[in-house]
Length: 220
Image: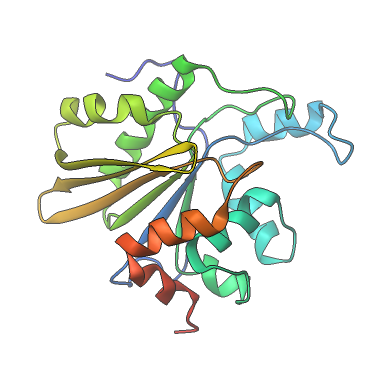
């Protein structure tokens, strides 16, 4: 049972061509920050985040029109080895969900372990409720991984089939496989793609396991 204090506020981004693809990737971000251009707390932004179900969708729309943040540049490079592709085309093929469903007030603020555990439970429920499920999940940050197996075991819908870990530099990478009816989902937890992110190493790791990620770069 989900604690009512922890609930889904923001709808996931679902690209227009996502559901019709053989490889359906959903990226799981970590936090949204309610700060202004000077990196100071912005109360208007904070209230808008709390009161809009489209916060995550609106952020991806901003990416489609040319805005960018380091986390996304590094994510593109981790997937493809570069960022030489049409951004709007990429986002039309993938999904994106924000794990922590409460806004951070400062860039220095971090979710606590209670957030990671309970909002991961919310995320799993969101995936359970999707009519067309992803084939691949990439968590952009691995702080919630320690809770994943036990929460999957509590799920009425998913079964854990594989659980693998590997060290990439100083950081741990995790690759799991879960099943729901006839749906097989490959789940990755990688280092948060912000500071000190060696995208070349993570690109090699991800594409060694799933070379078809590169097809998301194609125009078709």
